[in-house]
Structures are given as C-alpha cells and as structure tokens.
Length: 163
Length: 123
Image 1 (cartoon, rainbow over the protein chains, first blue to last red):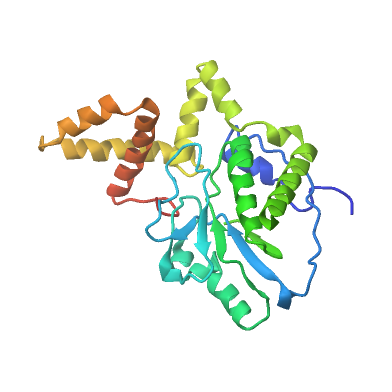
Image 2 (cartoon, rainbow over the protein chains, first blue to last red):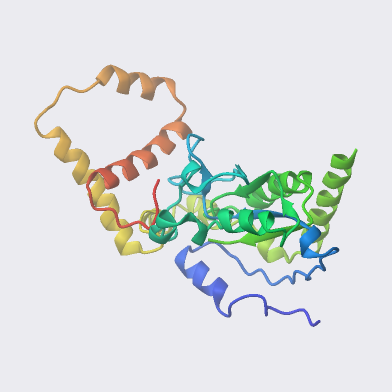
C-alpha cells in the first residue's frame, strides 16, 4: 500500500494549527495496519480513549493547565457508568453524560464479551485527555507509559478512540 | 518474564516509530511559545492564553478572562472578611509554578462561578 496521508482527514493539521498556533503538527507518517492473529471470539480486547473518563474519586485530569495533562488513568473494564466521570473541556459531553457508552462504550464491550462474540476484556481500560500541547513530552511520557501499561495487560487487540 | 518481553516489544515499537517519524512532529509544540518568550512577543503569548480559555476561540477567551476578573471583583466590593493569612502563607511558601497553576485554576473557578459556562465539558 502506498504511504500517504489517506488515514487523515484532508486539512486536519491546518485546522489544528490555526486553532492552536504553534502546535506545529505536520505528521505525515503512515501507520501500517496490523492483522488480528486469532478469531474475534478468542481475542482479548482493551480500550484506550482520549475522552478523559476516570473512576469517581480519583484525581481529576488537569483540564486547566495551559500545556495539558500527560497522565493516564486505568479504568477497570468491569466498571459501571455510574462508577465513572468525565473531566475535560474540549468536546461536548452532553450526550456522554446521558449515556457514557457514546464516548466510552464500556457496557457494549462488556456485552460483547458476555455473549462470547469477543474473547474477553483486559482487566483495565485506559483514558487520558487529548489536550497535550507538548508533542515531545507526550511521546516520551504519556505515550510510552500508556503503551507499556496496555501491553502489560496482554490484549490481543486494542481499540483506540479519540474523543 | 512475559511482562519484560511485552515491555521490550513496546519499547521496540516506540523506537521504530520515532526513528521513522518525520522531524516535524518531533519538534516540541512549545517551541513556538518558548521562542515567543525569548523574543518577548507578548501578543503571541496572550493569544495562546485566550485560545486556551476560549477553547480555540480567541474572542471567547478574551471574554472568559474578563469574566473571571469581574466575578472576582464583585465578591470583593462589600469588603467581606477573607482569610488573608491563608493567602499570605500560600504565596510565601509555594513555588511560582504552583502559584501559576493556581492562577489558571482560579480563572476557571471564577468563570464557572459566574454561572455562564461556555465550555463543552467540565473541569
């Protein structure tokens, strides 16, 4: 397959850079698609979201910091929506407040696992907020720490969901 | 041992991604702001603050900052008793970065307290 920007919406980075001048995002690397090594019904899934979802009572994401928050939270995959809350400022949450599954489909994934359509879920899902203006810090801290934490849960597949 | 293998795999993937990544994304986004600091380019810096408070809309951000100050001022007009000892202690004992973080937090606090919340989510 030819390497290109085809995975990205045309003009995406221009939009981001206008909205947040100095972001300097011109990413054009191509991420190759990976093949699932086993049937869905035997595969353990994890879920990573930028929705800022976290367990109630845990330290809220830092939504006021001008440069962003570079931490992530583990969200037990057996959580119920009322166990969870959202801390972020950069996307509309009205729908998510009515039904968290529209942004963080935890109950749908639990159902798929219970119905054996997928092989199971990792013990934890993961969430962070997408407002991170320091790309290098993001890569060296949040991205690496999160990747390590996800890999430690030994998923066969990970669903990535930007909010 | 399995965990070590997983960590090595992740590190390997991240390293490979970084090696193949264009220089453009490896630039820090903050370079723009740090350069503005070096050049004392106040307009770039305050525009960033306005965009932050306005969720990407500069004019909305300007109003949000004004709103925070007005809300704070309104609370002071009747000269209510306030905990000055607390204020003095915090200012005297905390580092400037923590106070700067508090400054941003207080702006959002007063924006929210105003009752007019234009932001999509919650702090």
